[in-house]
Image (cartoon, rainbow, N blue to C red; front, side, top):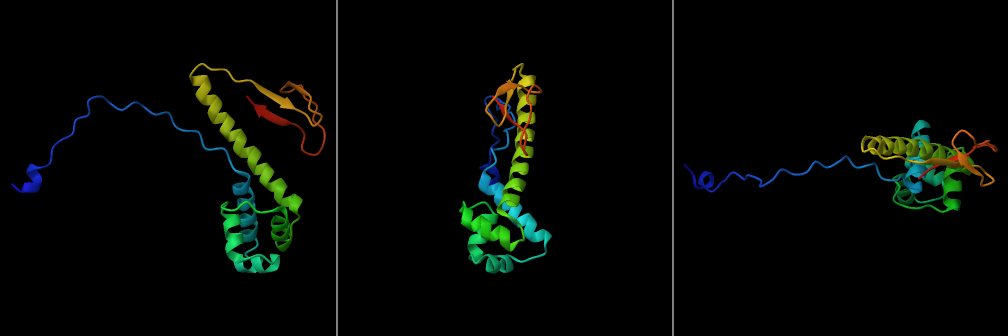
Length: 152
C-alpha cells in the first residue's frame, strides 16, 4: 500500500446540505440588450466588426465591447452604429425593448411559478401612457406600444 492511499480518508458530512431553490435569472441590463441587437443585426448582414466600426467611425474594440454589453454606449455612438447597419436609433431601441419585454415576461412566469408553489400571491397591475392604473385587462392601450405591465 502506498503512502498516498493510507493518507486518504472518507469524508462523511454531519448533516445533508439543504436543497437550494433554483435562482431566477438576473434582471436584464439595457446595455446587454442593445449590444445583442447590434451584434445580431451585424451578423445577419454578414458584416465584420471592422467593417461596421469603420462605417460608424468608432473603434473596433469599443464596438466589440458595446456588442458584448461591457460598455454603456452614448446615444451618439448607438446612432452611428445603427446608421452603419442601415437602421435608425429608434429601430435598435425598439428591438432591444421587445427583447426586454420577452425576457421580463419569462422572468415573471418563473417567479410566479415559484411563489404559487409556495402558496404566495402576486399582484400584477398595469399603467397606461397617461399614468392610469387598473387591473390587468381593464386598461385601454393607447399609443404605438400600448400599456406596460408592472409586477409587484
